[in-house]
Length: 133
Picture (cartoon, rainbow, N blue to C red):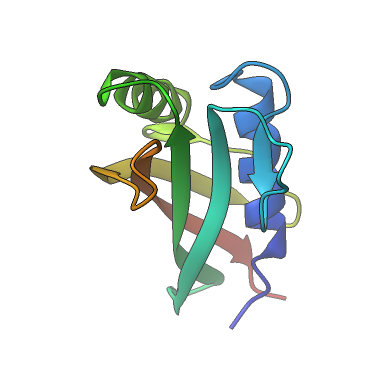
């Protein structure tokens, strides 16, 4: 299995540069108590080998959590749409990889148990390949 940390780093950088939320409210890991809403949190990943002849590959499913305190689901859905626009079918430069494409899929939106927060869960599906050495 190839190392996929550069994939997560590229996703983080792309989320910041696409301005999917105001300011630098993209969190890689646990959120701090003082993060303003709304924000996007990089969450869980699953990586599968996707080697093909001549290339080492990874198929990665990366979960993005979208957090909002606005009433209703509209803010979460708007942020998810901006993320999808930034990534869908785009060739994405990733350090150490020859080619990579990203697709946003599978949005779920629900109320958090605190009764105040909306929580969106969006999966990014990434295919990345590097030349075999």
